[in-house]
Image (cartoon, rainbow, N blue to C red; front, side, top):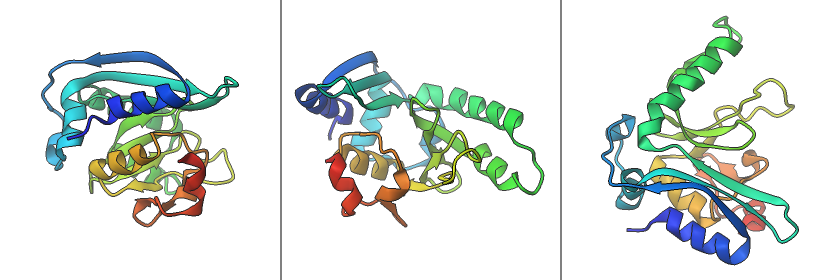
Length: 189
C-alpha cells in the first residue's frame, strides 16, 4: 500500500517550494459513488484517510509549477451538484450542447485545477475524464479527454510524474489515458 499524497509531499519538498494550503487526515468511511467502483488499497487509503489535501508548488524563481486540489469522498456529491449548477447556467439542452449536458450529468470532480478545469469520474464507465471549464472559448476542445481508464489508473500514472499540472493534456494521453511512454511527458519527469 502506498500513500500517494505523503510520497508527493516528500518529493515536492525536496525539489520545489511547497506550500500546504490544507491537509486534514481522519479515519473516514467511503460513502459515495466510489462504492460502485473497485479501488485498490492505495487509492482506497486516500479516500479513507484524507478529508482535505490542497498543495501548491513553485520553482526556485517562484514560478508556478503545479497544484493539487483533491476532492474528498465526502465532497464528491457537493462538487457534482456545483458542476450541475454551472451546466444549468451555461449550457442549453439544444442539440449543439446536449452531449456536454449528458456528460456533465454523469461526472464527479476528483481534482480541481486553479483555472477551473477538473479531472472527473465518469460514473457511466468508471473512467477519469477532463472537464474543461471554457469548452467553446479556446481553439482546442479538451472536454471529455480520457485521462485514465479508472481511478486507480489515474493515481498510479499521475503520481509517476508527481501530480504535475500539464498545460495541454492532449499531448500526454493516448486511447488509454495518460501515456507514460510519450515524448511530451519527459519534461514533467
